[in-house]
Amino acid sequence: MKLIITDTNVFFDIISIGALPEFFALDFEICTTDFVVKEILESEQKAQIESFIRAKKLNVFKFTAEEVDEIRKFTTKRFFKGITDKTVLWKSYQLKCPLLTGDKKLRNEAEDLKIEVHGSIWIINKFIEKEIVTKAKGVKLLEKLKLINASLPHDEIDKLIKRLK
Image 1 (cartoon, one colour):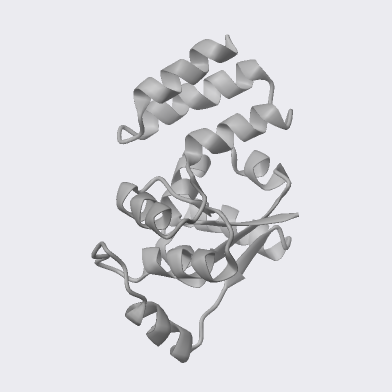
Image 2 (image 1 turned 90 degrees about the horizontal axis):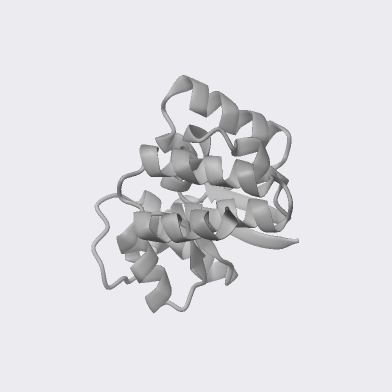
């Protein structure tokens, strides 16, 4: 099973479109960091994430003080205000595994580091590809995604919807 690390905004997208069970049905070992989990403050979202942690479907990397220091010192071309994005970037780089993000700055940084990077649209496409959802359900999820996340490339979503219909 392939390891994959996700950031906070991918969780927000997937939870908002009601596809968290489908996300964890993918054939990946889905991981994140304790910094990401701490950013999920809304109680219903937090409860959903915690249930997948308890079920051992979501692996959460916790860092020692030394690792946090190393992450803070991790050189990047772009400035990151908080440490959360750097934790997923650093762990993904360290483990040489794909990173899931919808954050453009984080995506560009990952690409510069030669890290395979994908986002929420790719995830929904995987649901369809792996027959976790039907094409019709995939189209509905993509349409919901367009409504909840204006920063996504809507033209890319539209092309995928057109291809699925």
